[in-house]
Amino acid sequence: MYSEEITQRIKKAIVHKGEQASEAYVDSLTKVEAMDLYLKDYGEKISPGEIRRVILEIFGVNLEGISSLEKLRISLYSKGQWIAQKAGDLFIVYTGANDVDVKIYPTAYFKERTGLNELPEKLIIKLKKLGYKRIEGGALYYKNPLDESVSLTFKDKTIGAIGEIVMDGYIDL
Image (tube, rainbow, N blue to C red; front, side, top):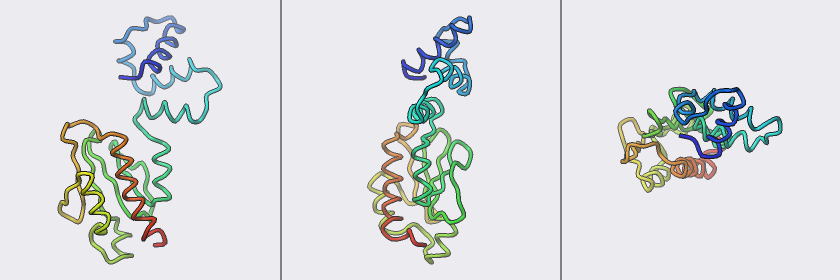
């Protein structure tokens, strides 16, 4: 479930607590418990970059990526909750269960300010190249054909395509 490095740190922390550090025990831990044990083994001096890396690996949350959404004015709904959302955002990236599928559509703010009821044509073209298809309501949709979470690379390409369109023509809305 976790990388070898993360698993080894968790096991070391478990042993220090006087418990059995089996694979089954590590797998039975909640993500919060795993993170807590990892940090206990790591010690007091852990860099912010390392903390972000571990959060990405354990929780599947890319804090650096989320931070970039704010300036690109992208709302993100993922893992059953709003991760990033502001009133002046232009586009919504909505991921389904386990990040297997993604839907992208314009916000009401974007529609009101531009008069467009769907994504801009340039963005549609870029996203179709990544495998997205048009669906009702002016949105684009992608579902991983392997029924697995979409890769971090795919997510980065999607956000990059949206960001490029925002920076090229909509940043001042």
